Length: 407
Image 1 (cartoon, rainbow, N blue to C red):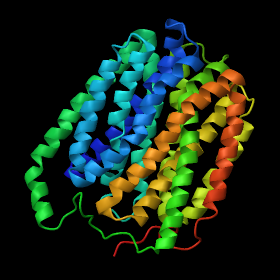
Image 2 (image 1 turned 180 degrees about the vertical axis):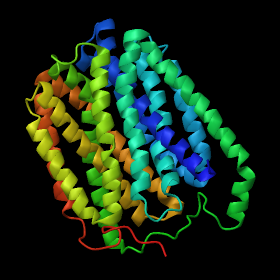
Image 3 (image 1 turned 180 degrees about the horizontal axis):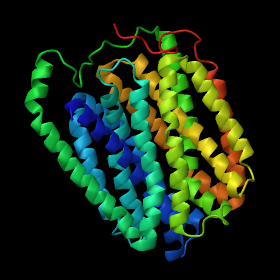
């Protein structure tokens, strides 16, 4: 396999593991720990909040270190650190101890998005499809967290749901380090000859953007990122619990609930491929508006559905939730220069995951007070706000229209 493809594969696996580790606790809390530790679901899930805060806040120093030191080296640290943290989390015996373990997971998980995404688009002109492929792997990690964690809970206990992925991640980190080491001389030669690196990007930079337009687009990116983070976290974290309550006739075990969540997440993940293709060949503004409008519609319909109807609509809203993910990343790639792109991605993801962290107490409060019906109302309104913001994007511009064709 060519080194470029193998490197892309490592990055994709990293995205898979990043989201996988961050959602192990969501299934463990919903399907085992609440009963084992004699706590309600609403009382337990806030202990994951520090981990999601770390997931967002630590993105800034991770992006800065990657731009100043080594993007590839930071990915090695990501694999090794998140694996070791997961293994340590399995030793927790109290809510406080598991919160500390989840915080460590969040710190290392924060590395991936600002660093991995900058590596994915490094040297590329059309970035929609590569980001979409990478996004599919991330969403398969979301899906597999529910499925594999549910299976391990039923067969080996919840602690093994943290240990086994941790061992695998450490192994992959060692393999990636060996891959980088074996190619150090070739990479040095490419850099000496003007090839792509963390400081430069082959294929030219993004088209020039006026300062006022840049600020306007970046503000819209950050706003839609914040609201999108609320929606993404609400759907991915709460879906196992939603299915436990609304698919009572279809799923009666942790494995079955995890299986339905896996199926929904897996089908929905491939929406990113379609969106990635569309933003490379059509107006990004139009595609973004269409996706946001569908989100609002599906959440409104989901309000009180149960059974098969709830399952079908869940597939629909997850398709458009996952489909939105690569759009803002494509926009950032089109308006930023390579040498500081990791830092801009880190800003985007600190917004995403800071909002995600605050979403957990919101989920707990809404579920404890009214059930998930009110949560779907909140998400429908949030999706409507994203649509309104997208309509403010400029109608013209190379970064808003289709991707430029390489010379």
